[in-house]
Image (cartoon, rainbow, N blue to C red; front, side):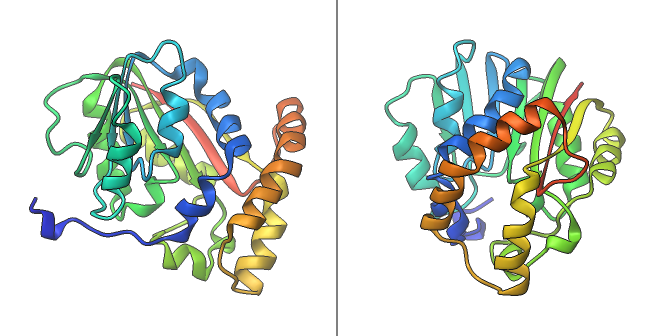
Length: 235
């Protein structure tokens, strides 16, 4: 694929979420038992989550894929000092031959991919036998907002629909759960009703004051519904 056909991404959500350290730590803690030595991070953006992955002791190789023309240079710069990391400008699966990864990770990425079923089939082919698929996506179609549309989300998922989609790609689901129940109402009011855009200030406040408490609460009891879905599956 030529450089001119690669997309550009101007979503402000990446800028704002780069400040959500507690939130990313929470997601990583859920994925930690399933992270292997060789990882593919699909849609790595500006590398915010990549840096957390590289702090995991078991990780010895991270290939971070980013097709966006404007995000890739920032990703490359962010990872340039780490020998374990490689920033790849392109779509995942373009140059993969056979099974090579222990874990394939999609954090807030699968919703950007129009044909998510084909993408999951690609992920299956690139994973070693016994390897893990790690997915974090926005949940609940009724929370779909102008912000979702503006940043290129094709959908928000229901848990059972995501489970079935992953199973259709021949994965065995290890766990799937709704995540961040407290975020539902702020999201609905700000982005569905008021049609606001996301901002660094609001993200930082939520990350500092709400996320630590909700991480404790949801660690004790999985909520029946939530703003996001976290799923782990195995080949």
